[in-house]
Image 1: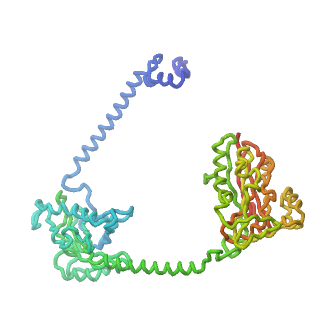
Image 2: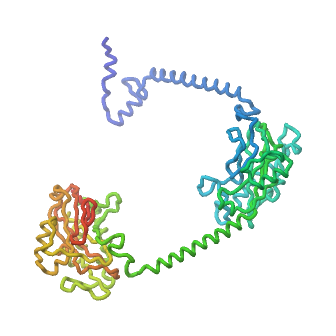
Image 3: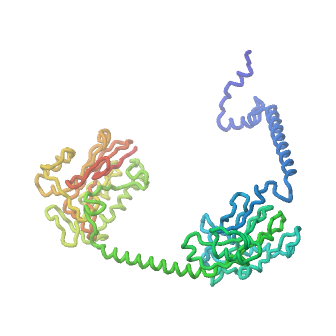
Length: 556
């Protein structure tokens, strides 16, 4: 059957533009819709969700009614699985009891003051009056809050002869640990309070004077149990490691080293308070403080001896290890400037030829790098050198003259960036005492670029051959085509030998070669590689040894 109404609904609605489309969405006169639905559709949708959520609320209400009807008010709905099997002995390390019968029905232990400080995963009791996080008052306030309920004794059964009221626990029985500042003042003898977690209906099976005590129980605790007729759940505390045991000092247990069984079982009384044992650390501060004083004093003495020995072997005028004996070896690497501030694009030089801001950014980077080269007053001991007089005076170094030797690549010409013919400065990294081995005319390698070979041969057998030569070209054939003509400054096209060796004399600056890319193709990323040529410079293209790689792009 052909349904005309169905096909009318399939016809796309005419586009009226963003604003009118929105108004039509709110109210469409032609289709009589509000928010793209008719009143009938909104009614059907509202009826569906009313029924749906009404059913959900009804089911939820039935579940809650059944649940509350079956939950007793005076005891937990679920209890531990073995009420008859109970703890008979316990050791603590402030966080975990070790039980005679260890399973899920046993209660745990807690302690006060339990403060997480310094973002540690475990609680730390660290007393330092000068630190806001570990000042003593913070621990005192925590203990006061803990004792507030214990001091409200009017609802308690003092004689423990009634099941209607919980047994009274007298905090005065804790002796020194019952009153502020609880040992958190000088001389520091801090108190830590161990309490039993509540477990409904749990009754302890305790050790007594006739019980067979476990082998792992401390000897001191065994003697206490054998001499104490009263029934208790006993505890013992020790350091986690031998180091802790040696420096935690003596511990007094107040009022006794355990919890009296008269406080058990817990029957759900709202005013029930767990019994508490106070641990009084008598001399932990003095022993630990003395240990750390001696420990760190010894470290400082050993460190000082090592530093004196190290400084005695280090010379200020030269490295202890040089050339092949050193980590950097005897083959210098290459560097270039300018480089980007973006760590992900250190090798990319990119700007638009009509963007003055970008051009100034690159020229400013070169200005900053070349500041020492330009300002002759910043570095001493510099003198003009050439191939005829290659050796400077004793204590002097050969100067690098940017104004006379670098043509268009000088600061006054904005290094060619404003004319879309940028200059990139190449330098040889400094290695103490390194002297280049120069190529003679008969020794030129076969892989040396032809234009560089012709350039070297033009000098004949003159002293200019004592140069570390530099060549730059595109990395691939396409890059070489896009790169265009190149000019080098100074015209010698390399690093003159009279700058070497580097002797760490004040005022020394590495010689520079400025590479001027005269007409690089626009809107293309051009991969450029530059290489230094000397017989004792190792070259490896894949590992970028003896060469540098950078990318150049100039957009319209």
